Image (cartoon, rainbow, N blue to C red; front, side, top):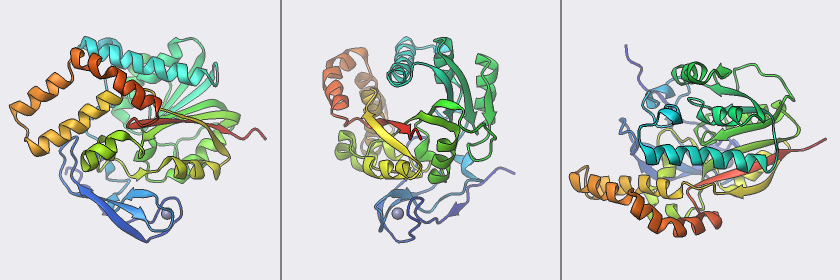
Length: 315
Ligand SMILES: [Zn+2]
């Protein structure tokens, strides 16, 4: 029997309040899986969350094996432009981390098929491990890159405390059913003074203002929480984690193309014209033309994805 999703109402994962207001309703625009989903704002602390949401036990229904983050090795990427994009994206992550910590033990939570870990490992400065709940993606990371991957989620795998110099979570936090429990575990696994580096959808992004319900950052029903920068800082501080910097690491135009796709598919339809417009928008010529604009959007921290660099108190 195929798995069917089940839904549950849940209180706010930060303050525990059950009071909320509806903000948005929408479909799964990315993968087109069935259902209509809802985002609410907590009446007490203001945190946005999906409610009701798919249960943790049935959530896998919304993560098919062709979900984009479960991507093949960058070296095997058939499209030249995409290969360059992906390699450059990994390099930017590594450089951003190494400004704070030059090397050591790194754990990537939600490592998918392991491309980021592989990039870190082959630089020679890092001893790396990953945690990944999708067994198929985890096995790919083990077999293709020879990486040490713990299959499961951070709340169930058994890892050594005060052991890691850096823990990363790339576009994962917003997918978690229990964000505070995860932050607690992260703070226990980090060495004192260690770094938690993570990226989340940016509620302050220019693109959210422009695209509204079509914004790629909503990604219903896989995204469960949407913390603002201020709320994220409050959540982190509860576990002794303090933000040193917020930064947009690039890729904002690629993100914009996704929102543009959702808008076109709704307004023009899934037609040849939509495909043509998206193909033109994604061409190298257009990308070069718009790159100065998106460079400034990132510089102003108004890109769709924002990365936080938080340090654990050194006590
Ligand atoms: Zn709340």
